[in-house]
Image 1 (cartoon, rainbow, N blue to C red):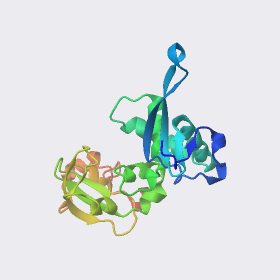
Image 2: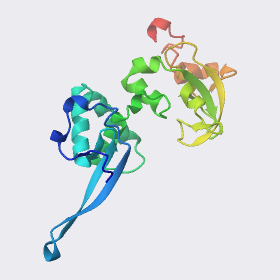
Image 3: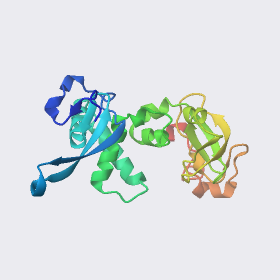
Image 4: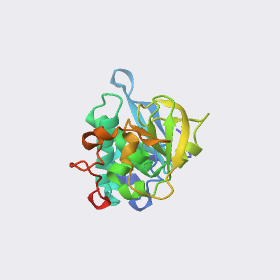
Length: 228
C-alpha cells in the first residue's frame, strides 16, 4: 500500500465532520492478499478497499460511511429513486444487493446532477421535475431508429464524432438537431407519436384524431389549455 495514503478500516478511523460526497467519491478499488500465522496455522484472506480523497477505505466501511452520509443529507428518498431506476433500467440480472451498491455509487458521484448522464432527462423528469424544467433541452433525430427524442445541450457538446446515445433504442448513433427548447415548458406529447413530423407537424388524418390523438377531447373537439 502507498505509505502516504491513510488506511481507514473502521468508522472510528475518520472524523464524521470531515467526510463529504466529494471526499468519499469512489476513485477505484484496490485488493491486497493478506495472511497471518505460519506453517499449518497460516491463514490467507483478501482485503478489499476503495481509494478516496480521504485515503483507502475498507469496502464495507465505505458503504457504511456513504449510507450514513446520505442519511445525514436527508437524501434517503433520492437513493430509493436511484435503486428503483437501476432496477428498471439495468441490463443485467443483478441481485437486489448489487443494485443497491450500484445506486450508492451513482448517488455519491451525484450522477443525477450531471446533465451529461444519458438518463439525466428521464430520471429527473420522473423524480425531480424542477430540475428537468430547468434543463437545456435539444430535440434530435438519431439515425439508428429515426425517432425524435430529447437530450441535453451538454450531451451534444460532449458528443464524440457527432454520436450520442439514443433514448429510444439504447444505441449510439449520429444525429440531426431539430430544435432547442427556448424556455422551460411542458413536454410535447406529439414527439412520441408516429404521426408527428418535425417539419410538417401532425400528419394524422382528421378522421382518426377523435380516438387516436391524446390531445383530442372525447367528443372529438380540441381540448382547451385548461383541460390539459
